[in-house]
Image 1 (cartoon, rainbow, N blue to C red):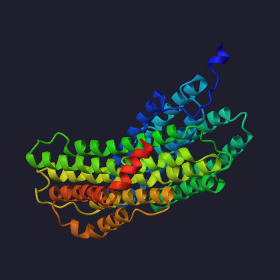
Image 2: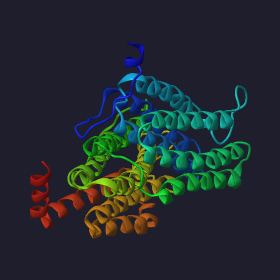
Image 3: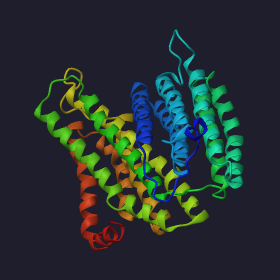
Image 4: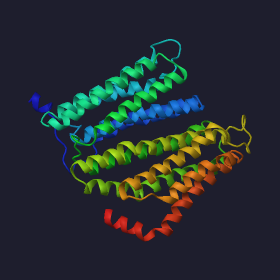
Length: 401
């Protein structure tokens, strides 16, 4: 009986997201919140760069377990214990995020602790995955290639833990490049994607989690400050922006991506999953997190009348994270269309470029006016697409419903 309880159960075509995977995502929710706070506390180009690099590290952890959960039932047998172990260490990773680059006086040396916990999360994943691949030589071979790429990446992060300034961030970038390129250059051979619907659902849920962070950022920006009609109106606009971002992804993009993944087979399916989800969803999530940071600061300007005037404009790094994050999100959506359908979404590219180009002008617009302007642009994009491509959209809905 004990051996039966510790067995691994392979996933099949009908596999769906399990509650333990959702539980695992709760830790990632906290990690995203910590990343946003890290950038808010160090509001400079370097601070934003650190936040984006941190998000890329966390994303690699999350994606690794998303692939694992598509190979075996992580809520069965010993895999469940591996998931709980990974959650515990991942929670420690999240707790050390505020000190991952600069250690606070007293206590443990957090930058080194972060690297150790990160390495443990990745190693736990590899051990569990190797167990799942015991009867699959091809999968075991590609997993060992991942391990070869992980070692220098963790080593570089370990060295960076004892540096500061540009050298530290530079080593983080190199470490990430080594890890990401190792997987990309290894190609799709050997990987297995048994349940495409499960895989697409996992990534859809993580997009929801990131969008939730943008809503949480509104509440944090307001904090315990007194409510006013101006704050109420701005809050509705902020929610409208988040809703517009939800619409631009889930109305068509998510449906088409899942359909393409389901229709593909073998190596083509794993290549599509790697490109569309593992890689292209990273700038998508990064864009949402940057928008959340911009919203948080915008609402602080609007609500904190003791330190900011009602007509004060959002300027500097905060406004660039808002407009630049939204532009990155729109460009990533267009890149997903290019990967799945072979053509760019030109109107989203144009809006993304216009947002960045107009940012110097928008720096002179009061924060309370900026929010409805940005929300109106996204909602206007949605209205344009419904009118211009309504028939195609209805066809997509009918085919993928």
